[in-house]
Length: 47
Image 1 (spheres, rainbow, N blue to C red):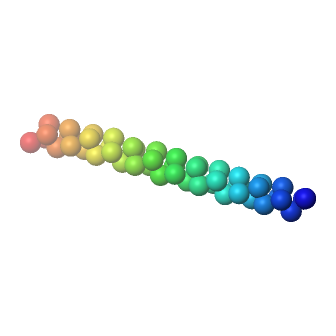
Image 2: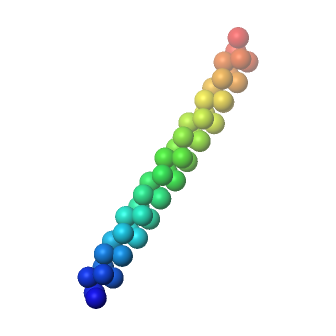
């Protein structure tokens, strides 16, 4: 019985870790995208 609960707990922990990992990836991607737009704007203004 306790084995079942621990397995479920491990699954949940792995799932949560995956979710936070994907979230951080997306956040990093958006930050890079925003920075890219900012850089492009600066290049346009300098030319």
